[in-house]
Image (cartoon, rainbow over the protein chains, first blue to last red):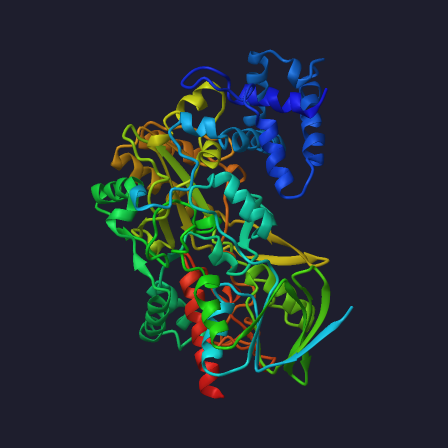
Length: 130
Length: 491
């Protein structure tokens, strides 16, 4: 399994499709967006890949369930992410915030997503903007 | 490696709020000035360009935004600029004069008698007319500023429109990634061109490795320089005056490397100027990205050492401020047109230290309980403003996060918040080579010259003896201008 699948799985868990606007993190190209950001700085997503693979195995390490993150049902994913968020250990809360930031920074910088919430991504340096 | 040899009257290291004004004043007085800038030339986004892609283009080409890890409780990152213009290139352009009670503290507790309100005010006027600094007018303020002002007014609190070095701003919100119309006069668009026009020489991508010291005085700088083709050159510049303006994180590292660790005060007294953020969602349409992002402030609690400032953040960052995930989070994001955020900046009594491993800085800092309580009070005050303005949901930036529908609910949530759960940030590092009259407790005197080494000046936020409470950009420019003028009068 590649890190793309894990990334998109996280996207689906953090921003499900449907609801107030159709597009969701599972279908939007958040991995492509992430790779664009990373490659712009002349880097490769080596550490992110390792981190996401580690994250994928976290349910096994934490809940002793023989399931990786991508194999969890939507309800189990939500429960797992909430347990990280509410953990008494700051390291787990930190991991939760990090993966959340990865998804949100990529998903909400996509033009079609921004447009669906009313945000214009073009730099409007114009009197009309005021 | 080939070497460049130069000789001049003054070497200025750094082109930010400290270095550039110092270079400008001295170059205009006729001194031969050489300026060294370690970072690259800052760029800007273009009109009509996608803000995120343009931002990535600018920041990847310039590597302008840097951060240093703060080890402590809570863990944080301190951000600063690393390019021509230093942090002034990547800030919001907010300008405040140093508050009078801060100046009083400097005079009474640190022996800095020269900083009377009259004297500081006169230099502030010079700085403000040069840049120029103007109040954000109603047209450029945007709905965000108007809503924030409404909340402050409803509470009967004190506040006002922010003053900025961005006359002619068109409110596109690209201040931190390079103003597309050059309205924001960061130092690389104001002081630096003025210095160059008066004959100063600038080396970009030039790293000062060591300040040369002999017989209790400076005699020059050794370093390396990468030319436009990436070729590496050695540098040796001779001068009897060296002004260091590398910022409060990098200045102590250069000073330690140059003068050794015999001056115990270098790198210590690190003030972080911590800040907390609160977001709010209104039913009305605000479109916070339209207009000046940081347009209004509340100084009701200035005497209690905190200031509240409006902000405006784009959705990728705003999404991280809204707590939770899943469908409930998505529903709130769908109301982004009604979103605004604001921050509290607290003058910290907590002290840290800048350390380095092979030249890479890291910071040790622990937030005192007293400062944490001030931050909590600031978060509550921000929530009070938002609810008074008619907010529907208000939420602080914290690790667990919560959404409050009433002030009571918000205050209860903040009360439960532990220090390690707080997400604080800092973009105003200061105090690591502070000024004062006591040679044991400070590195420079009130003219920003080292107590021990003749001709060695520190002209950046490192010299601030206490936190400034407000954004320190103008204070640094004032201090730097003051030091340069004093040097001229002594020559």
